[in-house]
Image (cartoon, rainbow, N blue to C red; front, side, top):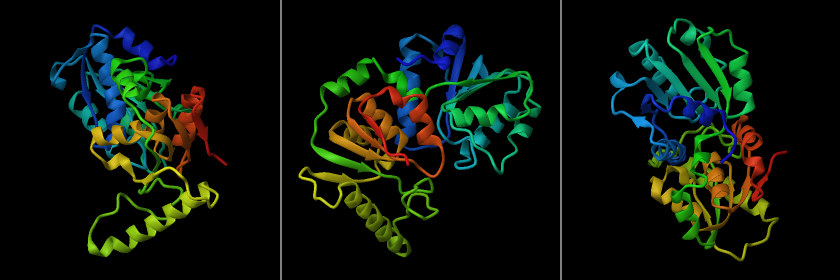
Length: 289
């Protein structure tokens, strides 16, 4: 397991009752949640089903307490307002703000708050803020890495195959390949044109990565983070190599010892987590300019 300030913190609160909560997300978000829950259960932490009985409210990690995906901002505000005397922990996250006044959200908080950034740019963002002394900041690793060394991961590795090349590229607003401000494309008649354009651009991307050659192996092009969690895992588990700008596709592939070509998105998240955590995995090859 990677050296980690978040693990050190969890060890310091091993006797506390923890309530876990999260904003809605995709299967990549479920992977990082799986890492945290597996760790807490293996270490016999006390997990409770309601926030009222908790010593700590812990918000799962991800990329939604920022101005790219804002859902987590509302969740954090709600927890601070509803449980003002309860310790709040935000598990390793990507933080970036250009519209939200994050300082004002934290200004009136009186309980202890612990904010974990999962890459340097997020940590620097938090450090640049004028925040109260009851708020602690940390640089840590994404919680999906907590699966390293677990039976769950060992079983996935043992049953993995090399059946195809997987191109798991984003089809939402974070994509650096698609010059479109999209969330997942709605599958109605009006949006069919956008879907055709996305597939055309992604197929051009694949052709470029293959230098114009047709790969001898079967290839799959799919934004697999929208699949149900078990299917998401299986797609990575049975690939021979993976091309992706999906952070948790890349992390899962690295944990499974797969060859990964990792591409950037429109902001610093993927590059930052690579530098913070993924760089040590020799099967990961960054495709950053």
